[in-house]
Length: 75
Image (cartoon, rainbow, N blue to C red):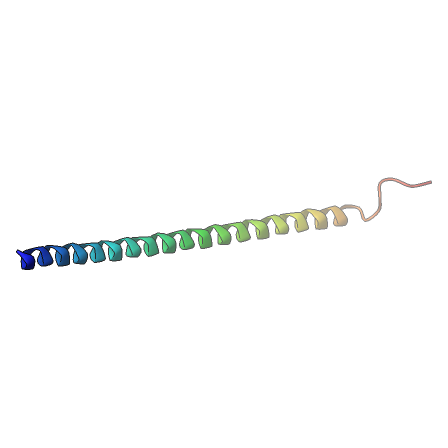
């Protein structure tokens, strides 16, 4: 009887160890997936900022090339 109970305890212990390994593996995969998503978001944000900066620079250059003089005078 003692050996049977010891066998059951060992099997339960092994099962819990396996369950913890599976949970930790899934947690690591989830963190890696979130890190990839964050990296993609950062790249998209960076590209969008660069595009906006280029558009602003193009507008400013077009405005400067348009006339060169102010359209108003102080006096």
